[in-house]
Each structure stands twice: as structure tokens, then as C-alpha cells.
Image 1 (cartoon, rainbow, N blue to C red):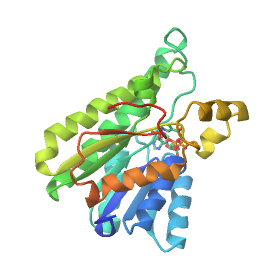
Image 2: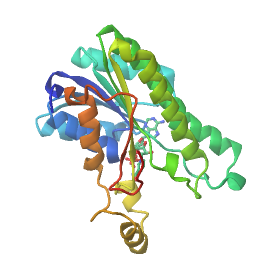
Image 3: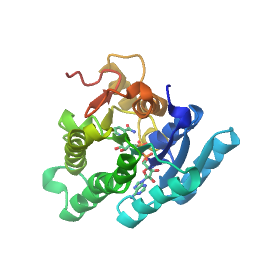
Length: 252
Ligand SMILES: NC(=O)c1ccc[n+]([C@@H]2O[C@H](COP(=O)([O-])OP(=O)(O)OC[C@H]3O[C@@H](n4cnc5c(N)ncnc54)[C@H](O)[C@@H]3O)[C@@H](O)[C@H]2O)c1
């Protein structure tokens, strides 16, 4: 994709799953990548594998819910690669105990908002001044189809993803004239390591039956969309929430 070979970016929550696939894809396109994860070892291992394959990446520990940690990962990108062109804010977690509205505690709600909404706010606060100073750049966030599907099994997580949509639109509107593009990807069911280990064959079969596609999602399906948004090919895409889901939700 155009322009990625001269860029450097951050993938937060890139130790495994969709984030790791995205870091690999961006590095394969020639970009320099800083991978951050609360599991610092996962970040280092993913970066190590990229370097072994000839790519440019480092892994650093990141607590996305901490402003200091978000500032540190931006500093790490500038120190290691001398520039920052995009930030993929992808991390998520804290869904244990997130059931329905009558069975989700206030603590679970607060934890989910810290990990799944505040982290994106802090990532944006840390990265945006640098992107603005260099004349523009891309913020790319991972949301979820759960934000709009009406999820009967979780209440807090879809609330946080809708908060993220407000952030995407705010950043796009406020900073577009300064060269900033803010977009979100809303994956459908993606067979990451973590997801795959919890799925029964029956569940997979029933998901496939309802999907107007021949297969469920793979992390690389999302990685390709993120790479496009980070590249110069995505130059005119701003303020969008892209559903990448094999057609599981059809909307304008
Ligand atoms: N897999 C799916 O089916 C699916 C569907 C819709 C949306 N999503 C979204 O895609 C993104 C990636 O999901 P995934 O399936 O790859 O999940 P995953 O659990 O495999 O990856 C999330 C990563 O974030 C890291 N993380 C968690 N809390 C963190 C914190 N406080 N600071 C830094 N890192 C932290 C985890 O250690 C992990 O490596 C998430 O935003 C998720 O909501 C996934």
C-alpha cells in the first residue's frame, strides 16, 4: 500500500490476536512498528518474530489505561524510529463479569470503561500533538460490531465501543483540517487465539450459517483494513466506522 514504507506507528494491544496480525502486516508493508501490550512479553515476542522475518519492530510494556504509559510508548516510537505517523489503538479486555444490565456490577462497568474507552482517549491525547506537529497522521481504533448489533449477552463492552465511536467522530471533525484522520474498524467474529479456544463446533456452525460468506473472520482480515487506513491509499477516509465482518451486519 502506498506510503507505508516510509512510516512509523504504534499498535497498542499488539501482543497477540488482531493487534499482532496488524503489526505483522504493517511491518510487511515496510512500516516501523512499536508494539505495546500489558503483557510485555507478548509484545516483545511478536516484535522479535517480525525482526526475524526482516521487519522493523520493537515491543514495549504498555498499560493503556495509564497516561504516563501512553506517553512512554509515543516517546519510544520517537526514540527508536524518529517519527510517528499513525497509532492503532486496538487493545481491549476486562469483560469478565460483564453480563446483562441486571447482572453487571459497577466495578465491572468501571473496569470496562477504563480499558475499552479511556485507553483510546489517553492514546489520542498522547499521540495527537505529535501527529499534528508533523503535519498530519492517522488514528485507527478497533471497535466492534457489538456496538450496534444490540448485544443481549454483554452491557458494558458495547457501551464502551459506542463511546469510542464518539471519540472517532470528535477527532475526525476537530482535527481533519490539520491533516488528522480518525477511523474505527468494527470487526465481526474473528478467530483469534483467545476467541477460538472458547468456541464450540456447534457455535461456529451456527455463526457460519447466518453469515453471507463462506468463512468466519481471521485476524489478517482486520489487519488489511487497518493497513489501508494507515497508508496513503486511505488518505480520503476520515471519521468512518468500517464494519469488516463477512457481511454479518449490513448497514449504510
Ligand atoms: N476477536 C473478535 O472476534 C473481535 C470482534 C470484535 C471486536 N474485536 C476487537 O478487536 C480488538 C482486538 O481483539 P482480539 O480478539 O485480538 O483480543 P485479544 O485479547 O487477543 O487482544 C487484546 C490485546 O490487548 C491487550 N490488553 C488488554 N488490556 C490492556 C491494557 N490495559 N493495556 C495494554 N494492552 C492491553 C491484551 O493483553 C491482548 O494482547 C479489541 O478491541 C476487540 O474489542 C475483536
